Every structure is written in C-alpha cells, then in structure tokens.
Amino acid sequence: MAAKERVGLVVSDKMNKTVVVAIENRSPHPKYGKIVVRTKRYKAHDEENKCKEGDRVRIRETRPLSRTKRWMVAEIVSSSSK
Image 1 (cartoon, one colour):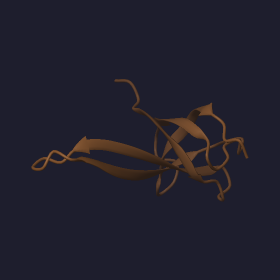
Image 2 (spheres, one colour; image 1 turned 30 degrees about the horizontal axis):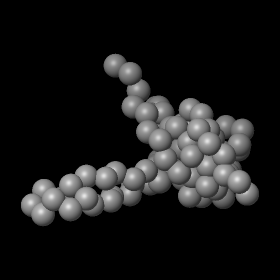
Image 3 (cartoon, helix red, strand yellow; image 1 turned 90 degrees about the vertical axis):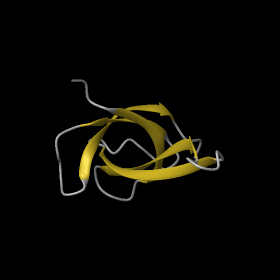
C-alpha cells in the first residue's frame, strides 16, 4: 500500500526540523450544498530546514517521528517570494 500524500501551505517554520502544513479540504455541505472549506494542520519533518512560511509543499505519511509528527516533507512544490 502506498503512503498517503497531501499538498498544503507551510504556516509555521519556527520549530527545528519541523514545519506546520495547513491543508484545505473543500466539500459541499451534506444538507445545504454550499461549499465548506475545512482546514487541517499537520506537523511534518523537514530534515534540512529548507521550508519557509508561505511555501507550497507535498507531504508524505511516514512512521511516527514524535508524539504529534507522522508526516515528512517530500518536496517543495513552489517557494514563497519572501
């Protein structure tokens, strides 16, 4: 079985070797049909501290690396212009 992958936006890079990635999920409301945006935040392992706030990254599921960290940064899709 392949590891899950998600694409999201780095919202925090303040920790050492860890980034917080926010992933938006857009789905219609079950009763009213309006598109609802739900955001989930994942902590991802960033070995070289390359990711900066505002970067768009692809994260991949991995074994538990800490109490809250179960994802790792696979690649930086696009870099922020900071």
